[in-house]
Length: 413
Image (cartoon, helix red, strand yellow):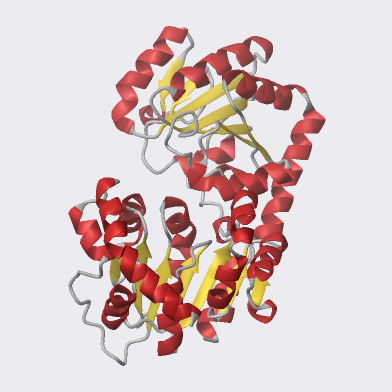
């Protein structure tokens, strides 16, 4: 009865939902794809179809290595990736076009649209990353015998306060899932409280921590200096970094800066800002393999930022003093480097939550806080070493999620 009421309810609000999508900037093509209007991918009934869903940038990024590993393990499978947002769709195409057989939008959770979508895709296994619960999708996959999982599941404390008020609503649908696999014991308890089956709700850790250090194919000489690396900076952030560096340099003369703008089209703009400081600088593209004789290195080469974190002592993660939502702090943390970020971190909020709780990194509100915490790390060796140790520990605690999925859901499933 509850399921029938929900079907009727969503049929009634479907036109309103579509109108909201259009008014919030979704392209016409995106709205059509959310209505399951896209070319039939041509999968046969004999195909083994594995579907992944990540709502936006952070979730798709978390799924990237798992999707690629799934392709290696199941070369004949058809792999489908869906997203909920057009920014998620863009990053999905950028990262996984060559790995998947279909990238499209997750369907609007209306019975007819869900059925239309599933008739085209016909998945054997569906893995939804993190939090999303779509009742009609759960109902229909259950009817078809499709295995439906939440992976990398999490519920923030703020969301949980709201979800508890609707516990009666979630319970019947959570029990339709084949399994719910979460990032932490705390997330486990939250899902079970909301009505998930304790027998099929388990901790798997966090997919985003399942990364490995990139291979270093070059040497770099720090010239006996300590190094702050500002990675993936955006417009307006370089000034903040340079002001903080100027302040720190006066107290820590051995400190040097590697400045890596997110977009190399800003190279000239960033260079002018560096010139105004009066510091000596050079470009990485000038075959610069040492910091000797300069104070600032502008990293203007493609594909080297992830490796350059190996040579810093602390890292500022850009995209966090504007509305970008931050970039992945684990690229630095995997090299055991403490990280500092500004307040805009919504693309990686769960990672920062784990890092902050472990005291392996810091989210600051403004330039002054940035300078203060960087100064403390440079001044207090015991504090610095403890922060590094915390980073090593949190990585060890969180890894293994990808193998969990491969072994427990895909290979056995």
